[in-house]
Length: 192
Image (cartoon, rainbow, N blue to C red; front, side, top):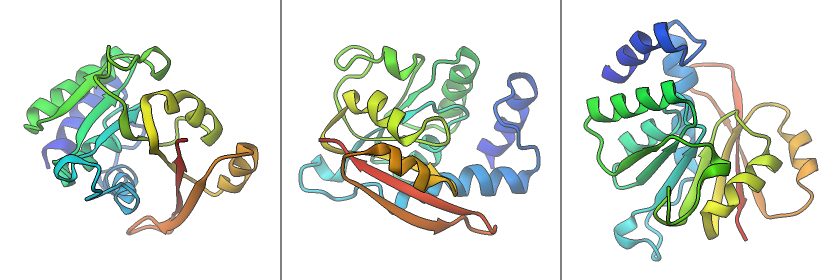
């Protein structure tokens, strides 16, 4: 698995992940990223040929964006990552994997301007443990089109975060992380 071996090689110098064992990386990064497939839009009439535009905010080592792109190659994927070292890895691994219609944007979400760094509003923005639900909605909503969604992967304290959300349409999908006892909560928030 090219992605795994490159991640481990680059991790020695760039500290891309705290996980060291192959099994942990596969379960807690790769499989965890694929949980987003349960809520990612598909085949919606408003999307040309079922294509959607997705921004992975705080992409880090490419999770969840790159695994999603591998499984759903029709997605236009934007990996947004402010760290120069992590962005260098993202550019390297997307080339090494031969991925098309994927772009690395080396900026923070607050710096992103539609029609400048990002060519258009996206249909969905995804993130892992980087933001609270409330902060992610505030920071990512400006780059997501009206009617689009924000998707977050949360742990057991999800209810506390949802209480702070105050308003907005959201759904929570409880899922078990494969080959583990870990429970995840995929939260989708509608952008209005």
